[in-house]
Amino acid sequence: MTYDNRHLREAFQRVPEIGDGHRWYDFPYRLIRNTLRSRVGRRIPRRVRQLLTYALNFLHPFNDHHRNLAWDPSDPWHNVTPPDEETLDIPGVWVIELFPPSEFDALVRSLDKNSWDTQRVRYGFGERNRDQLESLRSGRGGGWWRLGNVVSPGTFANPDAKVSKLPQDFTEVELTAAHIGDGLTAVVAFFNVSQGGACSLNNEWHRAHEAQLRWRNGRPVTEDRKWSSFRVTQGSRKLLHDRARNWMRDTLPGAFARRGVPQPLIELMLFSHYDPTLGTRMSLELSDALRALGLNCGPVEHCTSETFPGLLLDSAENRTCPTLDDNTWALWGQRTKVASLISHLHLYGGDSGSSIAHRINDGVRETLRLLSVSAFLGEVQAEFSRLRDAARAQHGKFNARRLRKMRDTFLEMSIDLSSIVRDVKHFHSRSRRVSEIPVFILEEPAWLADQLRDTGNAIPPMDYTNMLLESQEREVTDLAIEDREYREILSGVASLGASIDTFKVGRVALWVALLSLAVSMVALLLADVGSDTVLSRIVRFIAG
Image (cartoon, rainbow, N blue to C red; front, side, top):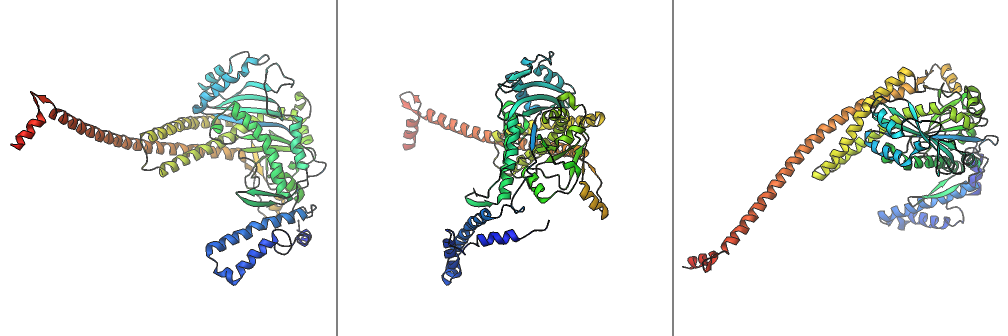
């Protein structure tokens, strides 16, 4: 799309450059600018000149904001205008939490506290959740089992559901769990989004957003209508994510929650008209409208799976979606097409968004299980790095208490890691054997693939799922080597620390012995011998 600078010229005609008018910021700007350019300004100390230059830069955003407000809203380069006929539905959100051996007690406490299995009528007359958890963790678990359902008060509840207050925008939460090997447990919460919650993001997306002047770290920052729309619309989407993640963190805190990391999340986003799988080149207006929602993969790459026909898998990137958290993904597509491609949808109540969400529930859980392992391995690697940096910064300052704390941290991580190494290998072998994990293919959209093919630069499709599996295997191998090296270093440091402590104890004991000897000598000198003390007799003997 060729840029038309007509809107740019008009904006500068309406709002001239700073210092060229009679607005409140023009007067101090001209005064400071003229002072710096004068002879007196050249003699001003360097530090003062820097402060005055900072003041000039401080005033510029006010002029930019004034111009952004006057900018023509019809300019597609400075505004976001979603298609009027397009509507967005979010029928479901999935959040996963992992529980390695160090978090097993927390999982047991959460199961005992919430007692979801006491409400079972239709499902699960057998073992309680805790008993099933312990029996499966002692073997090689792999399948999913239902922990329970939670519904908000006033919502139609099936007999198995426990009635409890849920965050607004959610009507029901379905909790299921599965083992990854025998030491790592995954729990997935499937949030059914209410009609109001699904409409809130759509309404924010279509709302006209004005230019904003915000304050960041004590400095003004200006946003035109486009960037304001990006931030506010993505913030509305993030609000839904935060409510789901916070409920999961408060109800089932695990490895991600303890580390303060957003739990991996997938949401289903269904559009009324636009079909991203067609592979046609989209306009700037549509591309920006999707970016405002935090969707980026459509223009240049497609990640598809036969498990989710008509849907694309998209991850939120901090570079283009700074408002959204890490570990955030979306499955998105055109609702009518998705409903026509998914088999047996009539068994789930029709072709509504809620029916589609329940139909793909099993596949989403398996996808989250794969993505969560990659996210968890990345956090373990980051934790190793933090410990290494802290050990280097505190070198020479260790005492027995600090060594014990470091030893406990490494012990916990080593136990988790030794379990993860086995569990990931078992998870991969089982997944490849029984094809549990959906296979995602990463490829260019049709319009871009045609261009690359015509220029002789065609790129073959890549198996994204296999890429993740191979990456996890490499990370597990590297972490196992790093853990072994760290334990050897810690063992040597602990031995040195024990020797230093022994030396310190011996030195203290020597001083105590000397002090005891001194006290004994004083007591002997002051002791009565007959009618005199030993000290008085010594004094008379010396005096002659």
